[in-house]
Length: 462
Ligand code: ARG
Image 1 (cartoon, rainbow, N blue to C red):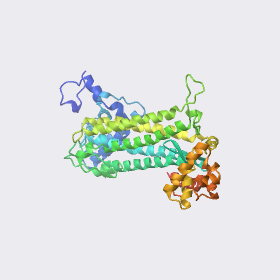
Image 2 (cartoon, helix red, strand yellow; image 1 turned 45 degrees about the horizontal axis):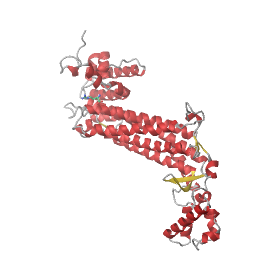
Image 3 (cartoon, rainbow, N blue to C red; image 1 turned 120 degrees about the vertical axis):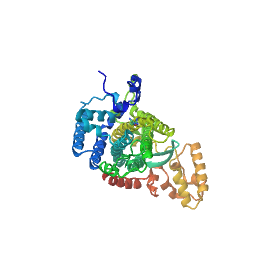
Image 4 (tube, rainbow, N blue to C red; image 1 turned 60 degrees about the vertical axis):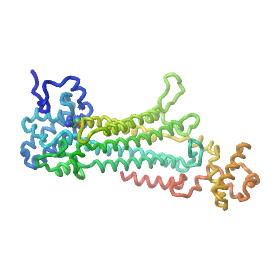
């Protein structure tokens, strides 16, 4: 027996082609919005009752029906049928089937266009909180690890060439700073998206006396949107959210790249715990950092989502277009990918060990103390540019002689500058230099300890 037509199909002749049903459906993707859809619908129905657009009894029936549906979906007892296109229609159809006439009033003064963007905003608020919590856990893992290496020196790199000595703690804390910016960016994203589009209808609002402030308040939005055309077509917050995810992925990818290099035989700086390594199907000796490589690679997906989202938006005429439906594919993918990567990164960081023996045994390679020697000369009244040239020549001399700066005699040193005195040796040797850093935010042990104390306090409050 042919089923009765759905109200939005009355306009069209015959049944939709199977191809159409498959192609337009988003239920397979947006079913995860169900809780938000139900919460949004209850708020809308309550407002309709407050405005006497439906009766109190109808509201009660709607609310109870929706709660039951929510429980059925949660328990996996709800049949999601793609003929309903999306989660909004599937829930509404189930409500009508459950409570009859009152269910048919739920969509009064509403369009899926304002409904869907309301749902997405509600979902994103929760999602941001989840990602922020995961960022905080990762930051805490870094701070804890930094606490173990607040005195241990490693080479700091520029251009991946040995540059200046730094404490391992400062290196680790550099990631805490990056993730802190990610945390703040998400907070800003939350603040901007937290306005209610509900009541904007399809594009022009409604002739019914809807109380938009009531639904906004019920749903915890800080304000309502002020232009219905913009409200149904604004997906800036989606692009912004994915961008925030993309930067998190970037930071994770740079960490991954560092540790892939640092855990290599050539470097041997860091040991990734066996639980987070894989081996080779052929070479029995291998301990591979595959998880880090996958974190690095998955960044590509998130960037892909960002470009996709921006591209979805750029060509659309004003108002809602079905293109918008594709936003969810990308916000979900970006968010899920970053969430998983944050979990894995936290596990790896929490179990990582630095090989301080190996690092310090090689610390005097690569003239890490050269810049400190320049600054020593500056302290003796030599102009910086001259001092820079003097030390450059000294390094070239050392390379020829196969010596270290600290291994030169005073006589050899003074051949390059008469300003060099016996106290120079206090400033040579990479291991001692980091103690001498005095500028705020330097990579020395003193500053690292201050930062650890700061972060412990800061993150402890989250
Ligand atoms: N599934 C759609 C979306 O995700 C809901 C809105 C559909 N609106 C419409 N007028 N066809 O955007």
